[in-house]
Image 1: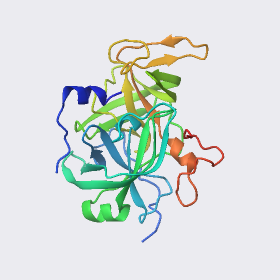
Image 2: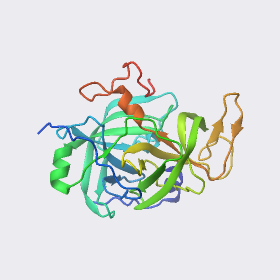
Image 3: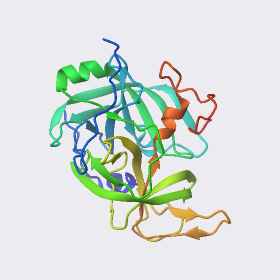
Length: 274
């Protein structure tokens, strides 16, 4: 996973000190993805996001990986919901300059089982962040990503953007004790590095978030930490050294009530349950 080596090497953190619908997110031109609305954490990348149905008076959301959770790696089979949090990060503008600090007060959902995500609720509303910093949250797409589509991975930790494409999907991806489903496989040469963990995967045609960057095979080992393997239906495992992967995020939109609350009992909800 793309945070472990950063911590092991002791890399310094980059982080420093009306209810109306938003409406459809404006489409962005190809390659127009910037560092705007990304959030630098102490050990990972993150982003300011909203659901397609979010309203301006809702509390804003911050998305990163499950393995970036402040409590450390989340054990396989564990799902965290509605946990108090004081996680902070630095909100960036389009060029990567710091706009100000944001703070979470709750972990709405976090797991490393089936997927690898942590979704925080911030103390500020979308309207307040727009008024203070002129930012607009990235919209989480409500549909499955498309193979072959162009994507960008803006990392707030490194203040760099990886431009790649989706090279299909992996039904089962395994790394150490964790297993992920329907993972996004990146195009050859899309070499995301430690510190890019938690970066949003942005479809460059729509400007919407279709996934979250989470891992890559670093040394060619089989199914070990930092060396995920692809597992076929018959159990055959395949390793591609240097291959990077991400997890889909439209799953969140399958589990929302009309009040935009995550409810894992909703029919068709794809998020893993405890």
